Image (cartoon, rainbow, N blue to C red; front, top):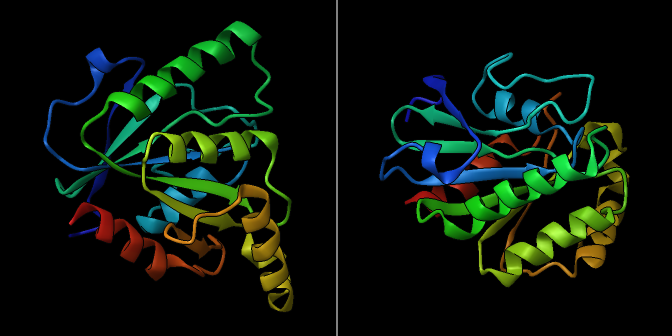
Length: 194
């Protein structure tokens, strides 16, 4: 698979707009500002395929990225602090839920959490939601470069404890700055699509 060969196919608001393909899909979910766009750009060795933004909550639709006609990455709107109305948030929630619970192409969800902090209530809810529906999870702890390596174990334990982490899921420590976790992330993704 040529990971550089990636393009955005469609931004969808509902199932009527999902691409009609048999391609396996990996969804990416996380709090606004957790580093989702940076994660996508790092994995695809691209600078701004996924737009990073100083303003949390930029992604408002399901963005489908076609990677070498082999797999779709599906970037779902970030949850948490986006300055949007309750009704708008509820709409996003429905859109995300519809996708996660009905899409047969979905193979796993990359759930991103900020390694520096204990997972938020939203992070815990997302993880519980995925577990409830039996959706495989690849948990990615981002921004590892902002923590001294000697403290990684402590932060990993804190995250796993807060989420009541299931040891059958993948746990990857990641940094888009120095590419820590790049190979592990691809390996986990490829395990789910093959």
